[in-house]
Image (cartoon, rainbow, N blue to C red; front, side, top):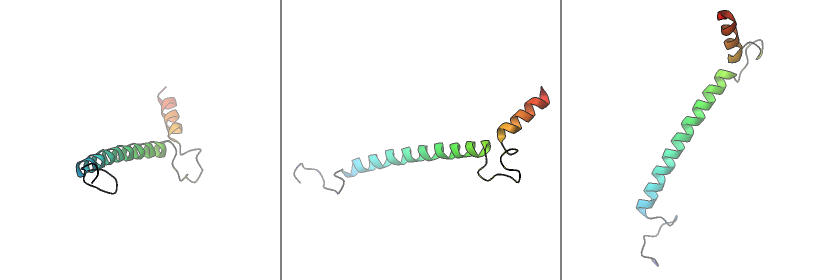
Length: 72
């Protein structure tokens, strides 16, 4: 080896590769959780499959407006 390090295809040592892998996996899990929460919030706001009457009666905002008019 020219620089005294163990050679690998990526050019990283075993310790560097493990550290990169742990950072990558942590970042991926955080991204996955954020994406899942975003999908749940969008589903609550407007389901991807509309009801029989379309989106007009199946929106979360319509439900909130109904509740506020009922208690106001």
